[in-house]
Image (cartoon, rainbow, N blue to C red; front, side, top):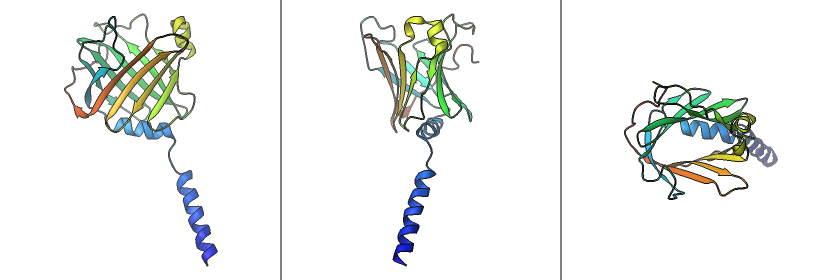
Length: 186
């Protein structure tokens, strides 16, 4: 009887492990819990010539579906940036949608990348895709990553082989008012 109980315990443990969600699905589900909420952020890599330094930074997890999440990133009065996350073939893709104030697409838009694997529940990596390489050749070595902790969200960029590094971190413990819709997403 002891062997049977041990076997049942081992099998039940294995089954619970096998039923766990992949890291990216846990990440996705955690991020969707913030849908409709806005948060203030701060630059973690300030520099004298960074156009974001000293400006109010707000992210708004504005729209969430089964396979998409839209997150406008406001820099002061500039509402031109939206991070577009989509779930495609079991992997998360990050694209940067840039718009002008009249809603028309910027010349440099829809760049980003797709995660190379399911990743972990608290961090997802996005190496530059071919569309990015064709659009912005110097960004071919870009790697973006998003971290998601219980009380913080960070968006990060590293250009491999250069000094280019950007990071902004948002406080998820305190909601703020959204500046309204991003340009072109009214």
